[in-house]
Image 1 (cartoon, rainbow over the protein chains, first blue to last red):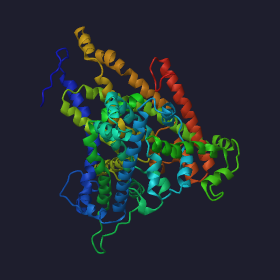
Image 2: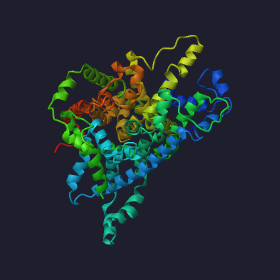
Image 3: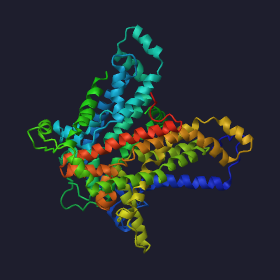
Image 4: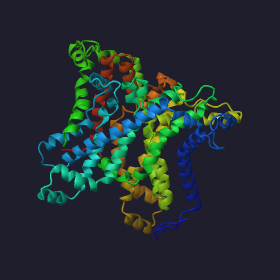
Length: 297
Length: 293
């Protein structure tokens, strides 16, 4: 155990206090981890193990990858994963470019129309359209059943924009001025000076956008009718919550029936994995990202 | 540089704001050959949609459900991130602290589809809890489909997803409190609890007030996907909130005028609430969401 120095004025922690703290924190951590564990273990279990357990498996007995073979065999789930990956990559790229450009433009007071533009962007917090007119606009533009319907309407998050803008404003102005004197244009300054200094905040905002696109569900319910263009959340919902079987291909006739519960849990796992993989790298920057937004929002 | 963002917001934010005129129309989506011609061609009927809306008992059910859930969550959800932040702040070991933080932030990034899926798998009729209880010979309770306890369930889900994330702001505020204050009061004989009460909580006050105001201003919003996903399992009576009401009135039954009217009502009341809440903040001597100009 690591010893951390306790300031001299602070009382020694009581045994009961430490036990209480430990219990609560353990409980909180388990409440998050146990569901993840059970889902992961069940997805890796064979049909026999699942039958023996009477459903979900808590204690693993061997590793069986057949559920993953089924969902990656080219059926609806494979397609949905590809759709979600496309939307996430494309959407995050579009959002980051638009957000960074606008944040840089709005970070410099004194430019033409600055006050109006700032007001224009910030008013979106107070005045927002309802679901119905948004739906009519998106369908009116002919975006129904287009993956752009999942990207464009939510491409700019003004919250993220405010976070990035606040960071840009915190950069020393002399730095930008000296580049300007040396004859660098605004795009060059943004690309060569501002962005290299802003990796952390861009990473956090990029994560926020990426997670948003990966999690897109309701927009797909509204705008995507074509099964082949369903993102993964939409498939997860119809497959697990509404109980419709997805069309899987690649399972040859005559092979044993797939362990359905394991397949379901495998879909949950593949939906969680991208988030769980990316997030630890960016986690340490959260406080700054969230805080700037909270203070200025 | 601002142009792409400007245009995107113009088309997908401000254009729909103007599109709210359908709330005053007998909107017929099949009039003409485009949404624009339908918008221009549909007859204006004044406040007729609002009259129908306010006469609909289902609408008032949705309003009552929304406000009940907001009130319930203010009491049973809002204080939890503060408590957890205090607890985490008191943990001495950096390793333990950052491990717990890593774990509890994670569910914030899950979609509602995933969160509800996890709850169904753990607490649902075919879930882990029921499975274990049946093995033990106990009839499992209906948790996921019981309208009477639905408000507890949705709050539990919201807590599971966001209690950890909610601590970030409070932890940051805690780290800005001057430790000299603690030392001085400890020397003067103030114990652990007195220090928490007289130093820590006043230090958190601005953040608490700010978040409380934002929540009050957003009283008509309790989340949408969470409720839409569970509406069928629990039933309209308990699970219909304003946003799902709008969805079912407009998109599902294609009565766009009525849905838009409900949406506009919500937006208008929401705007008034946020302005009032901000006034309240100024009256309490806090800076509020935006500064008075």
